Length: 86
Image (cartoon, rainbow, N blue to C red):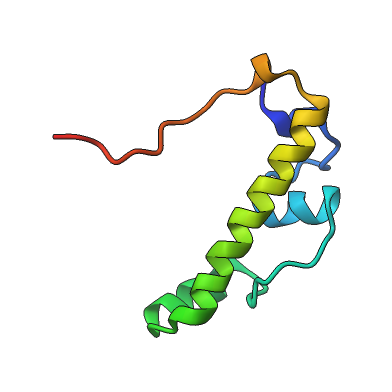
């Protein structure tokens, strides 16, 4: 079962919106949306892009900690994020 289904997120599934709804704390993210992050990447503006990525890690971690309090561990499924091997 998707952990988002366990919380009322009004049908929102993106990281920033769910984080804002359930946690609501400030992060170090300098961007309002992912489009701005993509533009920073295209412009090779690395420091704000790094802050954006760190903010996503922070959001993911805090949501995982919250979910662990309410969702049984057996309901979590892990994805393999390792690069494919040839």
